[in-house]
Length: 276
Image 1 (tube, rainbow, N blue to C red):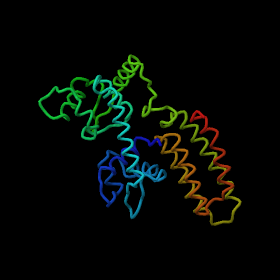
Image 2: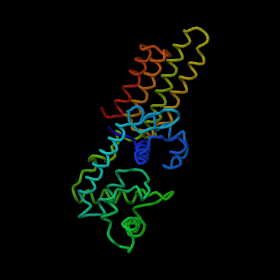
Image 3: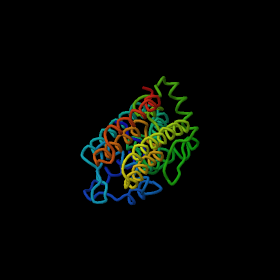
Image 4: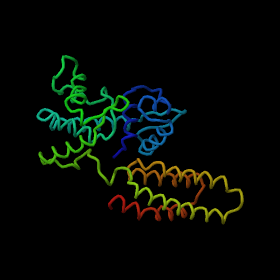
């Protein structure tokens, strides 16, 4: 199961809380670096759809499946780091940062990267890691809002080292262009498709009796929301689209025939974008 980086950040945060009280969207945003609670809510929807988190009483709770996913993710992540960390720390650190593809607080870096950091200072293992990223390899890392992420030069260095070691760039955990968010061209293509979908749905509602305007307004808002979620992987974006129609069918807002036609209308372009 591929979870987009923003949703993964939230899930990791929920996992670390180890409590049963849950978290409100605003608190999650404050502690994970999201700009607004709405951004948190949108990413949480991916977790809800995959059964990794649940929303109850205005709070977000990690599920048992979510905890298992995090534990498996950490185990696989650390195993990949250990492939090179003992012999080539630079490559192991760059590969981790490149595959993570998001800013991360130094305290949240894997313990193995802290423990194996070259002892360039007289301080803690964490301080040694900071030294490597800020002094030794400062061109490869930057730290917006006190969170570290790989730079463009860092990615180039990683790719160079990977070729030298004959390491596949698309190994497990590496970003895959068919799974990442949409390009600008693909966003425009999907926006056009969504506009066509809304035109088709509006035509259907025009055949119904008066009083359906509120329902149509709500449905249109749901579909317009998809245009703000292109940071999700294409697979998860498509799942979210289908999920919205499933909810509409369950609520009796739209019938199954109309929903099926719309999904079929979307599927060809999604198949092309996903490389299927």
